[in-house]
Image 1 (spheres, each protein chain N blue to C red):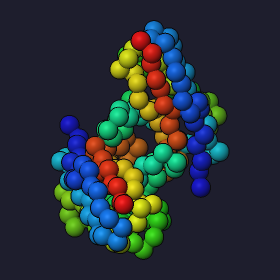
Image 2 (cartoon, rainbow over the protein chains, first blue to last red):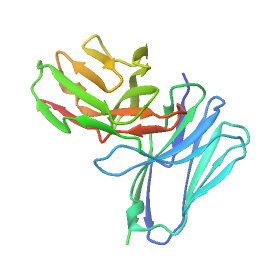
Image 3 (tube, each protein chain N blue to C red):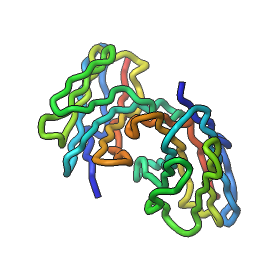
Length: 109
Length: 113
C-alpha cells in the first residue's frame, strides 16, 4: 500500500521563528492535505491542494503540492504559542486518505 | 458547518469487556470513516462506509472488531472482547462532498486494563 514519510517527527522552536515540514510518498497522489491536531481534539483541515505545483496560503500557513505529485511541504511563518500541536500530511491516490505519522510542534515562548 | 459527535469521550474498561463507541454525524455526508490513533502507529483507517454501506474493512485488526451504520445519522464501532492492546483514541470522520476533506469528531479515548 501507499506509504507517506513525514519529517521531521518533532520540532522545538522559539516563538517568532518560521517552521517547515514535508511529506513524501512512494506513489503519485491526486490530492495533498494538511491537518492540525490540538491536544485532546480531532485533526482539523488546514489546507487542501489539488493540482501539481499548486501553492496555497491560509494566513501564516503556506503549503505546496510538489511537481512530481509525490511530495508536499507546509511552512508556518512567525510561529506563535497556539501553533503547538501535531501536523499531519495526508494524500489521496483514491479514497481513502493515507496519513503521515505527524510532526509534533512545540513552540517556546 | 460539518460536524461529528462521538461518545463516550473517555472509556476505561477491563480486559474481556465489550466496548461500543458511537458516532453521530450532524451534517450531510457521503462517506464515514473510523480511525484509530496510537503513538506507535499514528492514524490507522479501520473501516469506511459510503452511503451507509461498508466499503473496505481491511483495516479492522481482528474479528473482535465490528462496525455498523444502520442509517446516515449513526454509526457504531464495537470491540468484543476488548484487550489492553486496543487502548487508543478512536476517531470518526465524515466527508461533505469531496472525499479528501475529512471532518473529524473529538475522538473516544479507550483504555483497556
